[in-house]
Amino acid sequence: MSQYQLRVYTLRSLDALSAYEKIWARHIPGMAKHRITTHGVWTVPVAPESEAPKLYALVSYRDADDVRERLETYLSSREFRADMAGFGISQIVGLDETLLTPTVDSPLR
Figure 1 (spheres, rainbow, N blue to C red):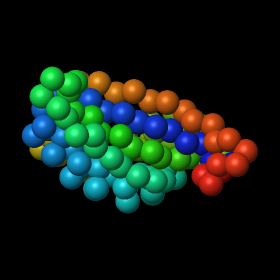
Figure 2 (figure 1 turned 120 degrees about the vertical axis):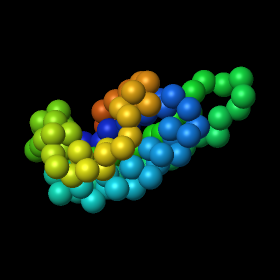
Figure 3 (figure 1 turned 45 degrees about the vertical axis):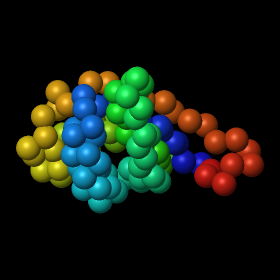
Figure 4 (figure 1 turned 180 degrees about the vertical axis):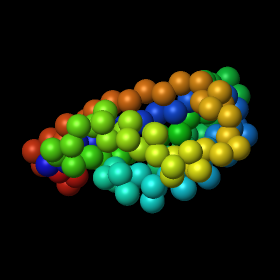
């Protein structure tokens, strides 16, 4: 059974969200090289009185892999640095990572 993780990025502005959406598109093949599979990337419409814009990504890791180790390996990779070129990391003002356990009947197991 795979290990799933929901990653929620809070961005500084709508412009930062738009730029980060493009970066995530580039992350997908690089992450795959490091045994991290992307199942989907989403944004939530932002109302004027609501919180900062967010980007959600559902990824998975192989069952036997150490999630933190896989992620650190990717974050220190040449692919990640190339993807992030020109994007100020300070545009990401928050990151929540939640490991998810599929239920017995979940299609994603």
